[in-house]
Amino acid sequence: MNFFDRRNFLRYASLGIFATLFTRKAEATTFLMKKFLALPPKEIPFITPNEHFYVVNFGKQPQIDTADWALEITGKVERPLRLTYPELLARPAVEKMVTLECIDNEVAGELISNAVWKGVSLKSLIEEAKPFPGVEDVAMWGADAYSDSISFDRAMNYDVFLAYQMNGATLPKEHGYPLRAVVPGLYGIKNVKWLTKIELLTEDYKGYWQQKGWTDVATIKVTSRIDAPGAYNTVKAGYTFRGIAFTGGYGIRAVELSFDGGTSWVPAALEPPPSMYSWVFWKYEWKDPKPGSYQVLSKATDKLGRTQTAFVARAFPDGTSGLHSVVTFVD
Image (cartoon, rainbow, N blue to C red; front, side, top):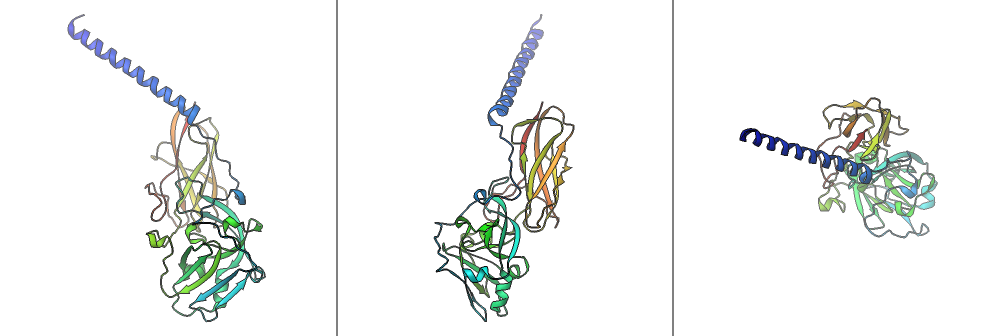
């Protein structure tokens, strides 16, 4: 063997050694992910039990005795109202299934839950108070000193109501007992708890978080999540992927999955929701996967044509965004 041949032999041999080491390292990494990093699939009911409903509070939970409590509706109104708890319970009730989501919820996070709420229409109370012309904002105040507002248009036209029951039970203390706002389509910051006062204003009211630079619009962004399989799970042909999608108050039109990192997409099947304000469950049967590892992504589109964006944003100032993905193995 001459010098040139020997040199090439050593070079190619060393490359082979490195390739073998790299392959072994990749195999070891895959083994570790499958064994130690694999997460179980999420099993969630369509209606979240009260004790499992997410809780994010502004401050210390106030202790309220309904014997001393009343709701005031004041501001730019001809006929201010002061309603006791029994008076509210005696009024015509509305009952709606509404999913709530915290503005600080990460992509595929846990700060989102679904419940059936019962209470009184905010529109009916405002009409009874006879608002003056020119009202722009409806400010809401809680017993915890928290406040926020919604537009007068939303209060009158978007099924906003004040809830005193949650999933057939008296509203739990941590969720705003005795009365809280339920504002379909807007993040949790607008759903004020422990209500004591509603004030109609002719100017835009900036609540606690708006004064710190957070959004005053708070429209929920289109989102979806892969609940099954969990990250780094191994599946077989015929496995059914499952998850949720949500858009606030407009309804989900489609959910799509990608098994190649977002290059191509396939449609998932949607389970018809009982409410336009609730999340949607979706599923997809993966019939003929080839062995290997896959980065699986989900993407939702609502009935307004808004599509979940791949742009990654943190919560401040108007909510998180991005596509959820899980690494899945097929043996």
